[in-house]
Length: 175
Image (cartoon, rainbow, N blue to C red; front, side, top):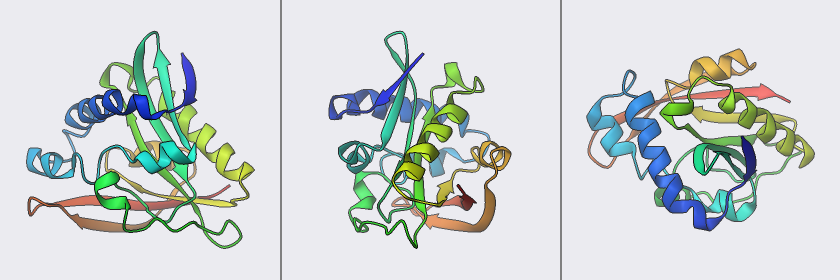
């Protein structure tokens, strides 16, 4: 298992990984219509994370097993299709870093890879001067984040392009 920063050449493989992760691991918490509406909009690749050097991938052999990272920008969640509306940089002295876009391939679920990515993201955010993190967690991700000290701040119903709404949980933690 190898963790590295994502590069733009990873985008096609990331897109495939995200879809597989959502379709399998989110199937018990979201409807097919919710997943259809969220993929590529709320749940998808955000190239700004890659360009900022804050997005990790984990490879097992030649396969991408997981991805996730953090952000110094205001967007709490979303792919390229929606994050362009909040590109402003956060101030580490007053703002919380964002934990963003965690997805694990179903073949590698529940093996500690997500937790390892979370630790790496928190360490990098701390090194950048942040003292808190927050996220917009999917329902399936909430147990992982609770286990690692995050608390639920708010439950959000995010409108999707297909008329559905996606429940997201805003969570936070001091670093």
